[in-house]
Length: 239
Ligand SMILES: NC(=O)c1ccc[n+]([C@@H]2O[C@H](COP(=O)([O-])OP(=O)(O)OC[C@H]3O[C@@H](n4cnc5c(N)ncnc54)[C@H](OP(=O)(O)O)[C@@H]3O)[C@@H](O)[C@H]2O)c1
Image 1 (cartoon, helix red, strand yellow):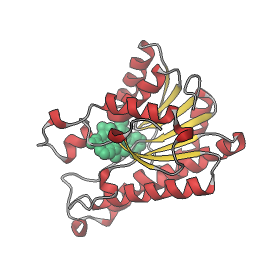
Image 2 (cartoon, protein in one colour):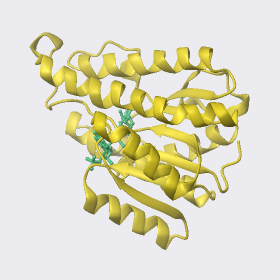
Image 3 (tube, rainbow, N blue to C red):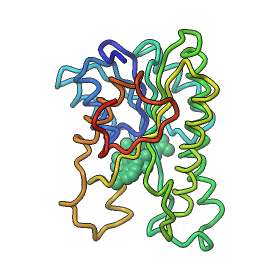
Image 4 (tube, protein in one colour):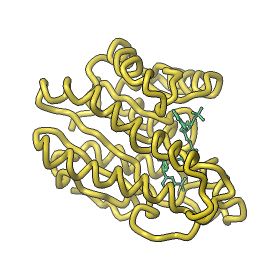
């Protein structure tokens, strides 16, 4: 898939992997609409990309908010044109420190599902119609090894990531003209990781920029990736 001059929408784009991926895609010529809740860090991220010569725009929205869905989709299309690539990267762990599933408040579980599953699903629905009409487009879902491993205390987050992996497979089966892929980025040195595992040795964690480069490579050759696949970024060596 060509990235140059393509409209891309990245959620959770103000820091961590979302920022790194927005920078990487902008450096490859994509026009990037970047979503996050907090305005100041998002605008700073956009400025950084523009200073680097890229095309980027800030969209201050919460992906878990139902009323924001069509506002995000509409504003993104107005700013960067048709959305050819949608990246569901924004995500929440729920309250930290993480707690065993049975001690997890249902309201907290609900918020994790709203942010990680339902909000992205609504946004996919809002964007997919245009992709289907054009007969092309890619939807990338950021997954986690927690989607397949049963780590104590990671229950709500794990269930949300397993759900989105499976939504990816079903969407691929239903719309074979488009591309749907889940990507496990691996453990990265980000604020989310620090919140979940504050004692981790940061030198063992991947740099978001390196993972972002892999994801951009996956996107560039996504036409050759099996539709609905669940990929592990660190194992990617080309399609
Ligand atoms: N870090 C890891 O080791 C790791 C491992 C496996 C998978 N992942 C996955 O990789 C992805 C990126 O993780 P990360 O570590 O880079 O996260 P991060 O550092 O916590 O960054 C999260 C980004 O998402 C935004 N965000 C959070 N909630 C949002 C909401 N409701 N609406 C819109 N934006 C929202 C945040 O900005 P605001 O707070 O301003 O909204 C921020 O820009 C996630 O899907 C995560 O589950 C991460």
